[in-house]
Length: 79
Image 1 (cartoon, rainbow, N blue to C red):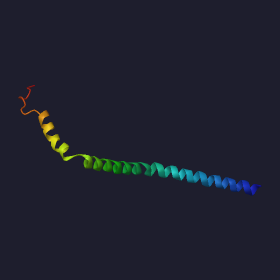
Image 2: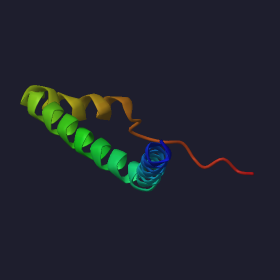
Image 3: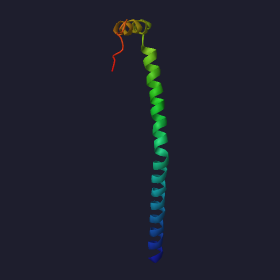
Image 4: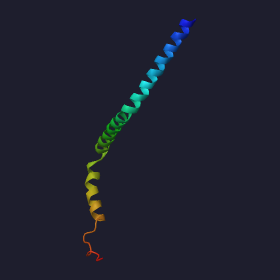
């Protein structure tokens, strides 16, 4: 009976050590994995958006932006 309890205790210790090692790996390497995934997602979204835009939309945007910008500005404000 003592052999079985010792084996059970050893198995529990091995599982606890493996769990601790897994948590340490997740804490140490987790942010890098998440950052890599976010950069890949950002790249995919950017390429899909640029592929979906028509040339007419990209040609129309600079003129709209130029209409919003003032053509002349006033003098500097004295302090």
